[in-house]
Structure formats: C-alpha cells, structure tokens
Image 1 (cartoon, rainbow, N blue to C red):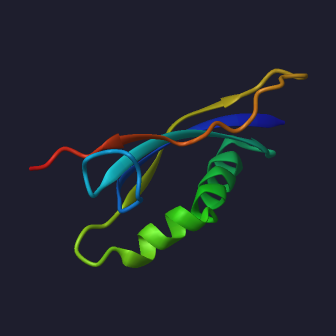
Image 2 (image 1 turned 180 degrees about the vertical axis):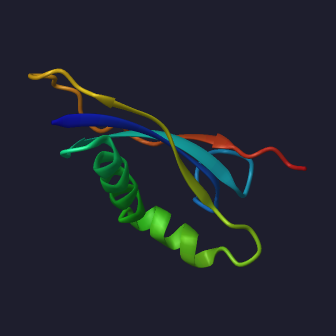
Length: 94
C-alpha cells in the first residue's frame, strides 16, 4: 500500500531565505508500507536522511529540533502523488 505522510519540523538551523536563524518546515513523503505505523516510521527516516536535516540535528546544542507526523493517508491504487519539497517558515522569536 502507498501512503502520503505529511510532516512538520520545528526549530531547525537550516539556512533559508527566512529572516530567522531557526525555521520550521512542512513536507509530504510518499512511501510503500504494509501499515500506517510503518509508513510514518519510513517517512521520518527519509526526512532524517536529508543532509540539511542531519546537519541541523547535529548542530543543535541548546534547542532541540522536532519532527512530527501531522497526517498519514493511504493513497488509492494508481495515485501519482510524489514527495513534496520542503516549505520553510520562520520560527517566531519568543
């Protein structure tokens, strides 16, 4: 079965065009899995393999980046949905 998994990352030190040092992002990963739980695990593993994300996790000493599953949906057979690019947003200063 194919699943589309929508993820949100927060507090990542990834260089972008945003004015903030820390950014959040949204992304969708499409994975083949036998259960929704396995699909979520695979999607997180895919994002964590991204070099920018890996670097942000390793650079962070005082702020912990987070990665959350927002939604996971089973796709209908023949769906042509693919991974999306990261959509970044500035984290608000507190």
